[in-house]
Image (tube, rainbow, N blue to C red; front, side, top):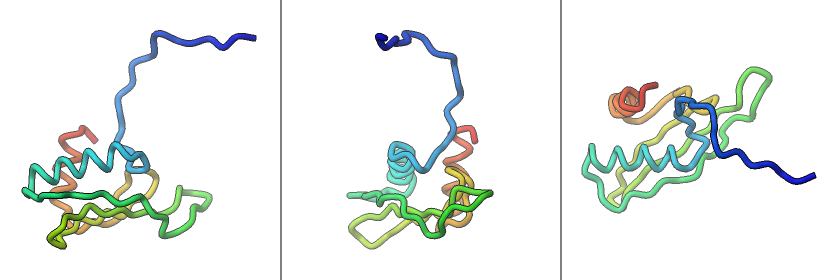
Length: 99
């Protein structure tokens, strides 16, 4: 049976999902503009605590530059923030994205 391809989709609002690389990179871009950091890198999302019946586990990632400045985010369930090193900047980012 041939595969069918759609050329239209139902409109959906995008939700921040730090499991996806583009959302971590978008946050890094926001930090570059906000804090004037240069040569910024984003780490992979690492699992700190395994998933359980009620959540997807606890994960963290870091945004850092070559001058030993870092921005650490610990999250659960894709976008529930548990802790961060700069809460006011992360709150501003989430407000700008509409979450």
